[in-house]
Length: 112
Image 1 (tube, rainbow, N blue to C red):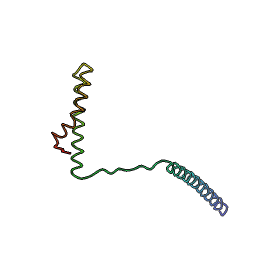
Image 2: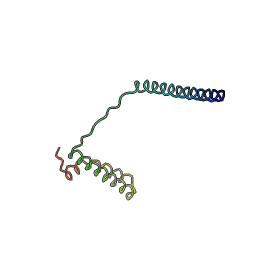
Image 3: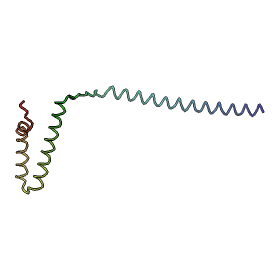
Image 4: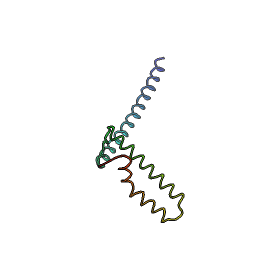
């Protein structure tokens, strides 16, 4: 009976040692990976976070700009679908670019 217990204890200890060796290998790999990542991150330039304004006026301006972009894009799509000549398409493109400041001032009453 004691020989059987000794054999089982030896098996448990061998299994525990095997698990400890696997854990140590995993930890060593993770440490190497962290060290490599640290070296790479140290070489790369830091990201600069630009915080945008969060007030009501800033949100309104972003919404207005989004509306302008969508309208400009729709104008371009319609012009490219309806007009056959390249000169007319380019003319609409140039005219719409030139009219954006006028529309901003007239529609949204921006006097700056």
